[in-house]
Length: 257
Image (cartoon, rainbow, N blue to C red; front, top):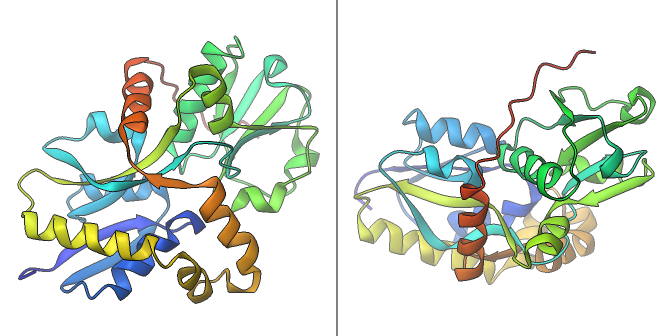
């Protein structure tokens, strides 16, 4: 690539294979930055990134943009790192506190609340993750995403995997994030990115061992090969079309404390 391609990717365990591929596949003239999902979208929309892994929920709002590569962050079974936790069943939840770092997870929770759980909860942003258990009132639930889920596993009476709940309701997989680039991006760039991501998929264990998760490599490898499905196929495209066309959106309010 003649010019430097600015790429932003999510800074979670589930992107380790992509990052490994970008760094070790021989890709030239690339500047890579890592950020939470929502920040990746903001970086792309502001023009600070040419290529980005963005939350699937924001794609319809992007202008002059194509989904690229055959890879995504998806799930065909329980994803484990996108969950609703609380001390009451989802059907009895009155307030939901959401991780604003992931727009897709927030909107997926809203879809499930409306279509599956048949509730109309109040929605609030969740910014403080310390001691969630002691701060929860009756009827409260929390949408947790990413690595933070591991820190709170087993704390609550009910844990609902949102990908699994979507699959049960729709008989479709789910897609949380996709790679995008601006229309007109040279094919040579897209081909090199595809090769880089394929290289990462072929070296998942090596990616884990080079990451901050090397001290629990077995658990990380199992998560990446069992809970995450990286192939962006026709079924995931169909799932996104259904998700996008629902028109269900929520705007969480500031945490009331």
